[in-house]
Length: 169
Image (tube, rainbow, N blue to C red; front, side):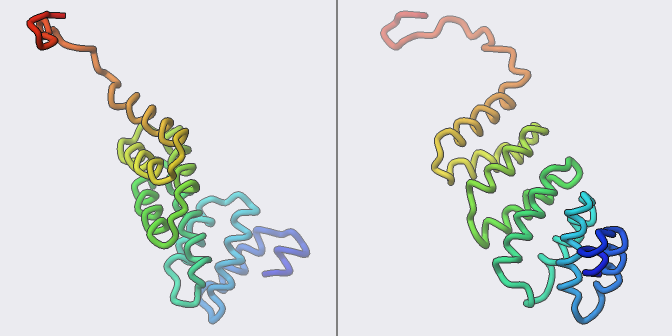
């Protein structure tokens, strides 16, 4: 597999060979190699599958690698309407392991660029607060407010409003 991937540049062959090794004794190494091939070939489905295998693998995966896989998997899942809810759960798991708030905010900002999903916007606002970055928080609140007021037709007629001293405005 390594020869096909590195020396020959035959990514399809390397993917096939590594795929055959996934159930063997060095399945984690095969999965890592398959991830490299998937990224190099732009195969997002294979990338997600490989990341999921790393995340779900036994204790052989170092904590740092598992956390990195969680963040990368969350980014992929958040980018797709069909897997966005799973992406929020995956991101929550990554944040529980290693709270990389700026990184998470960037992922949620990208997800919010392509969706007005209330769950994404709510998560973005919470993570933006955790970053302590006022620009990130302003962006999150602006997006959240824009969606919250979408379809709002303005104040309804409620009659004069008193300022407290009997003066109506």
